[in-house]
Image (cartoon, protein in one colour):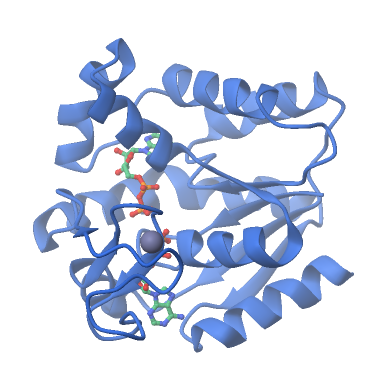
Length: 215
Ligand code: ADP
Ligand code: ADP
Ligand code: ZN
């Protein structure tokens, strides 16, 4: 099974991908995570991407598609792939067809996480994650069960993203509207888009996605 989670910044793509990984043994392929790792490591890709990401603009199609190809090659053929934050442009959607096809894979579903735009700034400015294992949290909507201790790994250090501020969110949302939302009709024409209500509780969103994957 190969699926895309599609939705604006803060829709819940990462949250739902992490849950699916734990429950279904699929792999999460997040270009945002890959790019942040490259920035941290100071690789040539990271050096190119850093300022673009801080402005909330999109990194080049060539860079992200190459990252996705490498990541797919590093995982077993049997593991399902959850594309989180990729593709984000028509060119990336087209590249993905080739990337999957040449590896004997094909897309099963595009899960559109539908959210109220007014909720996104609060979602994003309250977002943080475990510095050790990456589990996502929120100041209001998902605090660790024991304050200051990660539910998943017991880690006590947390981090916030530099681009998770109200101003950058506006640019990211504009990029989503202009470049990412227009790829939905391409998939819709193929009959593989399934919409879920991203304003529901996280558990309910997970349940809705699992129902879709179960067929
Ligand atoms: P994305 O990967 O689409 O940018 P995230 O999964 O990181 O979004 O979610 C953004 C923030 O909103 C996180 O802090 C997360 O805990 C929170 N969040 C995710 N889904 C929901 C939901 N259904 N209801 C309330 N908050 C949510
Ligand atoms: P969010 O969780 O808010 O949707 P991501 O972590 O997916 O954000 O992406 C953070 C930033 O990384 C984006 O604003 C963009 O600069 C860059 N990025 C991530 N994925 C892509 C992609 N597929 N194409 C271009 N840029 C990307
Ligand atoms: Zn942790």
